Length: 107
Image 1 (cartoon, rainbow, N blue to C red):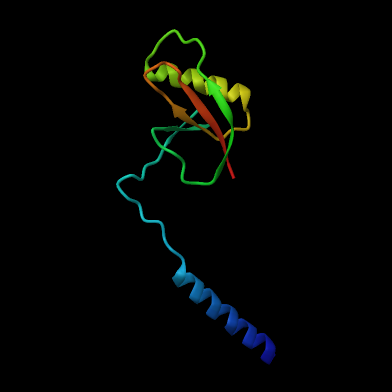
Image 2: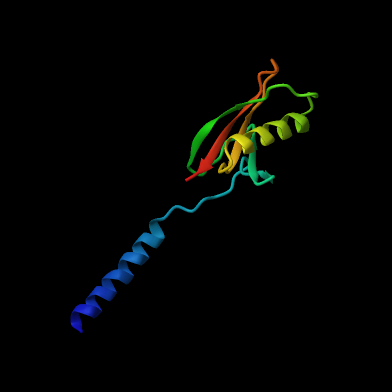
């Protein structure tokens, strides 16, 4: 009984010490929540904070328009067909028209 009691006290003390030493995430002005469209998180001009693996890169190809929504939807469709188990995409849009996206899977 004495061994059980001292083990319990040690466990509680360790929990208290670790509980106070854990850093809490504090939102800042750069913190935001990204949109999830068709089951994929869309990161545009941003990067995910959570650990993730890159599954590959998807190029834009031919698109009938240059508006953001047209480009985004085309990249979404291509990413979902090439990587059906993906969790999100990181858009890489530039002025030269060489748009693509990185397809990611969260760990």
